[in-house]
Length: 202
Image 1 (cartoon, rainbow, N blue to C red):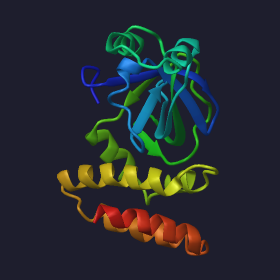
Image 2: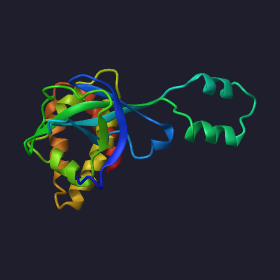
Image 3: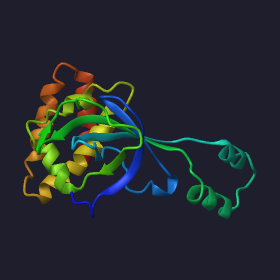
């Protein structure tokens, strides 16, 4: 992804080796979407990849005052969304990293730092990351707790499936589904939840 085509979607608030949270203003909440692949590039060239697992729009004192009114003038709503720094948090689960031109589906050796930039990956980078190895990054998603794993997977696979199909690899999605069945073979309920969610892509 060239410098000109990078889409900045936030700056990091906090991070550890397996998750990080970025913040952005409400008016910038256009490109981020559930299941999208994104990355942070560290100063030493290490690139940390993650999937957006949740987007949280918090309230503040002004919002509380506005929603308690009988009616809210349109200009108040527009001003609040476009001119105020409403706290929007983008929660990301780490799924791998890139180093020296190679992709690894392991947790990064160290987390990114506060205020590092979070960028959305384009289709080319999405294909490169997901096409490396044998779907090893799935394990990072499947081990999530108290999160809608099947919805995150479905959103991600829908994007990746289209990207691979455009790149001439329509069989990538079939392989992904087979790998999920293998990984979830001992978790019938989890497997059924994932397969039911994926059925909506057909």
